[in-house]
Structure formats: C-alpha cells, structure tokens
Image 1 (cartoon, rainbow, N blue to C red):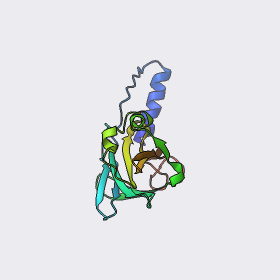
Image 2 (cartoon, rainbow, N blue to C red):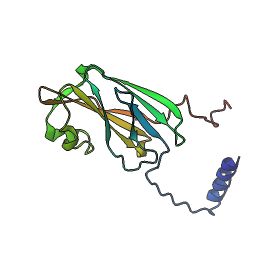
Image 3 (cartoon, rainbow, N blue to C red):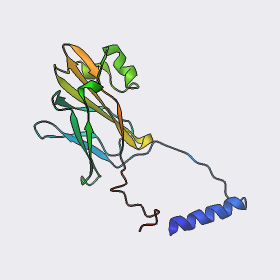
Length: 170
C-alpha cells in the first residue's frame, strides 16, 4: 500500500505543480548469478551477482554435446530457474578470428578463442543488466577454423518464478 500511496501523492503533486521530477538512470546491479556445470560436474560461475560490467566468462563442451544447461541462482545460492539452450551444428557459420570482436559487439576478444582445441565448443556468457538478461555465444574449432553460433539473449526473469502482486491474481 505504501507504493500505491506514494503514486497517488505523486500524481496529486504533479497535477498541482508541486512536484519537480528528475529521473536518473543507471545500469542496474542485478542479484542474479548464472552457473553451469562442466562435463566433470564441476560448477562454474559464469555471471556473478551484482555484475554491472558484463565480464565475459566461458564454459566448454565437446561438439557432440551442443545443449547447454545454465542455472540461475539468487544471492543466497538458491536455484531459482534452469535454462536449456539447444543448438545444432547447422546454426554455426565460419568466422575469421578478426571478425569475432565485431560479431560479438566487442565482448569476445580473439585471445579468448586462441586456445579452443579441435571439436571443442566454448560458450561465452556475459550479463546485459540494462536489458535484464544475459547473452550466450558459442564458438567452436574444426580443422583449425573457427565457427560461431547464433547469439542468444536470455531474460533473467521468468513469469514462472516471479511473484507479481499487481496482476490481480494474489
């Protein structure tokens, strides 16, 4: 009710010229953590909670395993949601090393792809807090050539686990 009360007071003050509103926007610090598991079942933190910088991290798979499972956790390390990102080898296209930076909007540097071995797929993941989500870009190497997959944007929030008190259902 405090929120609704504040909205009513704001509308009243705005109508009568008593309110001077100045909005400033900043990149939000989201309390979400994204983790994945290696083929040896070791947890890898791909996105840290409250990451504003969008640091690029990665997790590797063999080319035969193109389905990536990622898990969203809250600040108390409770799993909130799991994402399944299926890919097909047909979704990849050949890319020159020099083009990777442009293709990923300056996120994935060539140095991050230099040590990808034959038939390894590396999934690069980074936060996009201004869009309240994160991106995943897969790159693999075959016969000394690099291939890049489709860039996927994934929303952090999903209606199935968010409590919405303004939808009239609660």
